[in-house]
Length: 268
Image 1 (cartoon, helix red, strand yellow):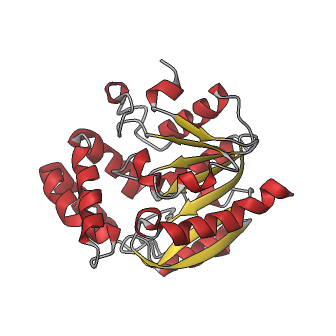
Image 2 (cartoon, rainbow, N blue to C red; image 1 turned 90 degrees about the vertical axis):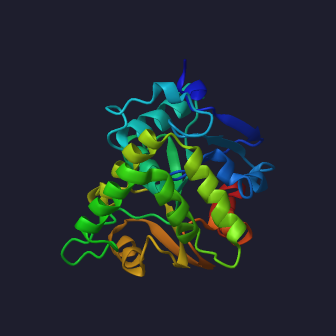
């Protein structure tokens, strides 16, 4: 079975340029349904499920292979190679923002520019770096996941979505979390919340849009500042939005920011 089959790759749209969307923790490719279609007239659009999520071949989830983001980087690289694609635009949400960054660093021929939505190179505070959480708090969160993943999902999903005036969106994320195999979810949570890719993002040379919400329970403004001070070729847009999933809760504003960043490359 190929990587394209493993990850249930879906290809839509038309155009010489390709844009690939990677979802974040606890989600699947369906989370792009309000954004990705807007690009189908100008781009070939690729969405897929990270291994262990959605319609991916979950039986092939290998805890050793996916003990770091490198396993997911391998999948992205394999998909682009299998489809014989180069110079794509890669869009990654949350933890997948780091995945596309690692792939861009490893194979710059494959990725022309990047969009990182609500990224964090490290969630843990470390000296002058304020990632938002003390290391012991992150370890405590993971302990809760080990004991009661479904309870954690029901409590945390609405906070992560960050739009209490629209509870249906929090319920949508809760449902997505609860559909995930708890063992995979707990394993990927360790990779998501304990990684430190600060040195990696410093090495990204491609043009990058860092797209943030003004109020995000997982990513404080100190992280935005750090990224802008340390990335080589990044622009920063702060949406007038709340939460950690603007492509779901504020799809129009998210799409507008993406179009502004990618369309000039199509017509130039």
